[in-house]
Image (tube, rainbow, N blue to C red; front, side):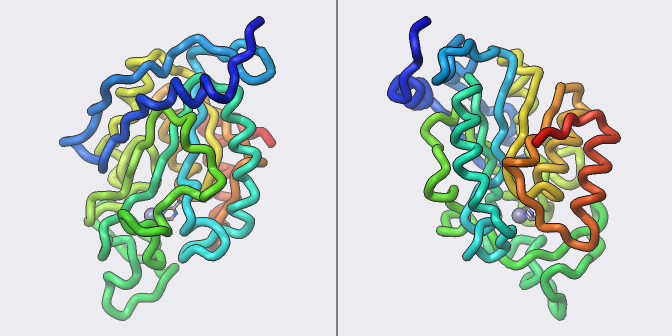
Length: 247
Ligand code: VGL
Ligand code: ZN
């Protein structure tokens, strides 16, 4: 069997589109993609064409030194890079907020980070300013391989709604377009890794399961914020929705 070299993997990724922002105007706007190429991974194993690796928010602000640092967030990067070799379709998500986003504590007079507020769409944790569009904090961790990505989904661009999930904003109804991408390519089995286990990975995994995909979360390649028991709640909720937790 012919080995697929790193060089040819990178070459197939040069067509990667970016879904800019979220919401009705941009949902489903994906073109020029050949994510379903039948390939082999670096071990010479055939890569299933119905499986995608979804790498959630491996960005500087969620890594040590960032404004919303997740403990050991950077330690998962080599594991994720390794896992990329097993998939013919790789999707990265990027938390991508405008300055002054409504999820930032700094946008709420008298409120501190990690306090809760009531939003029209439900409870919202207030976060330190993070992943502001175009900032260094919003960039992917420098060691994360981004060239193999077929698609980058940016989320959280609506100033009034947070968006933890790769599929929907936190109103749980406004789509990001990711479902249209996956379905149009026949991708049915999703493997999720990234940051943070108890927020964006959790919401993405639960939404994916609800949408009918077969979902696994590789906990070895995830790290959690763990705010007031949020990690346990996340693991319980993912399991209740049939998400396979592996590590
Ligand atoms: C995230 C909090 C706020 C995450 C994003 O990626 O888990 N958490 N924005
Ligand atoms: Zn965010």
